[in-house]
Length: 346
Image 1 (cartoon, one colour):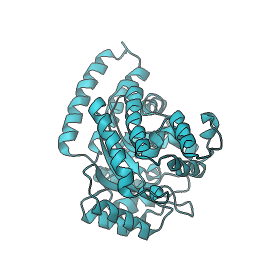
Image 2 (image 1 turned 90 degrees about the horizontal axis):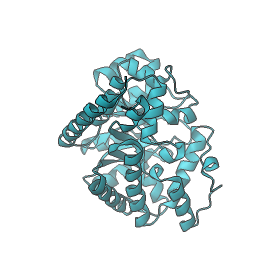
Image 3 (image 1 turned 30 degrees about the horizontal axis):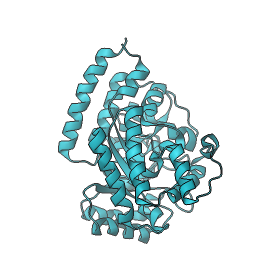
């Protein structure tokens, strides 16, 4: 028999909200910084990743891209990140957000980044059976024209693994302003790319960002979205459209200062009938992993086993992969659920 924390740890999982640069381990991050002469404020992970808020974290997130320069860097981060997630949380499928604009500023072209990254993920898939897709993410600190140029790169260099676009970071004014990138999203939609966006995440965000993402950007799923519970009409709209929200419990304790308990906004989203799928967001920076998000995050919010399994299923349904892959994952998950349910102590 196993206890509930172990049950949550061992549940098979997807991860749909995962920034590639953050899948490094802290020792590897420090090693690559030394390799490329990137000066870090400290090499003590406890202090290196001590953030006070979202803006503080984003500064560190941006300079983390400095340590990824050579093809072998991308391949190694990709492969080792999958291996760790399998060991730490029974990962079976993952989608990565990759910011081409960050790397372009450092002299790396689109294929310079994507080719070795995909190579490392393919090797990990062969060894561990973890499927993957990639979302090219717009850096909101850049202009709307730059976002269009990034989408044009995705279209001009088609890769079967790159299936959608998103947007993250914050504008220079520290706002979300998702509608600023409507032209880029329309272009992506015309070319069959899936669409998602970080919205209604921060304490100073508004629920209306959800409406903009759904009605103006035509997003297929949403990232975060916590402010939606402040607007019942938007909750109803999201339920009607069966939108999946990729939520990241541990990150909210740092970026928003919220406590993981039964009053958390993610729990309120679940209670409101919204479909949520749990991810890490930025595992290295928030000192988390996909196992911890379930084992500690869901448990602290009072989520029971039935609901935890529903959250895991939502991660399949919200994925940007093909229907055959979803069917395989559903069958694999259901078989694992049966085995774990038989072991769960009452």
